[in-house]
Length: 443
Image (tube, rainbow, N blue to C red; front, side, top):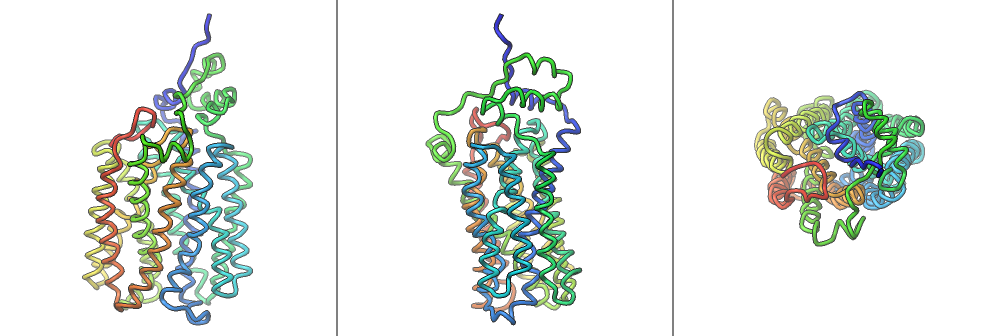
């Protein structure tokens, strides 16, 4: 009698929500929180180093975005590694690199050049956490809730941004900006803990010929079928003829891939342009040091709301692509309001809306990308998108500084953000519906 065969993706899609799912979402959220914290602490040191280090507006912008160069390299390269050796060891390595070099930045960065080098090295680890965490959690979530819960895991990145704002106010009161980077060393501690508790992807294990380990993990999600998993043959969809970069850029996925890259570039331009300059611009508008820095926290808090509500809208009503287009369109409106109003109340509302729609929209895009590709190229596709997108993240603070230096005032940055968000509406429209080989989101 032939051995029964079970498709792992079907088993995961049809599973009820279990504590194991919430555990995975929580662990991904902690990893992305470490990413968000370390990514967003540079704006809170600008006030203390711009004059001593003799920085121009453009150089100050590059100070904020320098870590994104390493981030881009890490994003571009880690996906191939994760698709070959596993999600678990790759993510843990990212946490360890992030934590160690964050501490070294606090201890050894004494000039603009030394800071930039250390931030680039830190970025090699940071570039792993968000794209891989998003791809990983999508491989476990039931299809009916994947947008909401994957977005929830990714919002750890925004929680880290909030923590960066809080620490930026609390720890730098007397100019001790180095303490921000020592706190970032907690990522390495988290990596050591994950050596014990973080499981590998069940889909990846079956794809690599390790069905026994996958069966044990599936039994934690559907314990009533544990005996069947031990006796049945576990399978995944037939692998495509190409994988990794060849599949991502192949004819089946090429248009979607380019659209995803363009969308990521534009959205990350808005995200890092806003987070890199908003605190300083609000201070320039006369709102004071503490209130100005608090705007950074508003952006991040509202991005959490935007990600979760956007995921709900995507799952129940519009689908992820259309929901993201709506979010980007509303982001255009919020950026224009910021550009042409100056009162405290209107700034708070507009900044909150920008966080909800533009920063929150980035989490929706991450999830769209993760479910566009099959498991054999999911890490590669997510990493490449965010790696290319990080060029926009680098350009946002840098070009923002150049525009502010050239035109003066505070409005020009927000106009540039509105233009980028409008272009993102167009690029997202080309991320068409998934193929049968790709699991998860509908258009």
